[in-house]
Length: 230
Image (cartoon, rainbow, N blue to C red; front, side):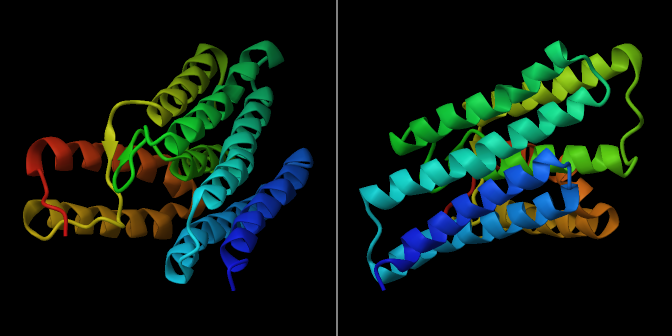
C-alpha cells in the first residue's frame, strides 16, 4: 500500500507528458482532460500519503518534479504556442516565462518558502488553470480578438501577471485550512459560489477570471477579514 501515493504522483507526471503530445497538435480539448486528471492525481497523492503514513522527503521531491512537467512546462508551452498565432515568435517567446517561474517556485516550496497551510504566491496548479482558461477564452471568443498593439499589451500583461504571482509575497488562501466562521468564511463561500457560476457560464474559460478573483478574495481575507483558522 505504501506505493499508492507515489503511483498517483507518477500519474500526474504521465498526464503532463500526454498533455505535451496533444499540445503538439493543438488538441486543446484532450490537453484539458489530461490537465484535469493530473490535478485530480495531484490532490489525491498528498491525501493518500497522509492517510497511509507514507509522506516524506521522497514524496515531496517526486511531487515537485511531476508538477514541474504538468503545471510548469505544459502551461508555459501552451501560452507560447497561443501567442505564436497572432504575434511574432520572438515576442511570443516570453510566454515561456511562467514555466521558469513555476520551476523556481517549486524549488522554493521544497525549501518551505512558499507556504504550508496557506500559500505564499500563486500555486502552480492554479496558475496552470489560469493560462489554460485564457487560451480557452481566446478560442471561444470570450475575450476580444487580439490585433495590433493590443495583442502585444494583453499577451505581455498576462505573461507578467502569471510570472509575478507565482513567486509574489501575497498570501493565497487554501481550502484545506478553512476559517472558523464570520466574514472570512462567508467570503470563501461566496467565492466558491461565484466560481461555480462562472464555470457553468464560461466552462474552462472561466479560470481566466476565477484565478485572478482568488487573488482578490485572498487579499481581502488577509487584510480585511483576518480569519482564525479551524
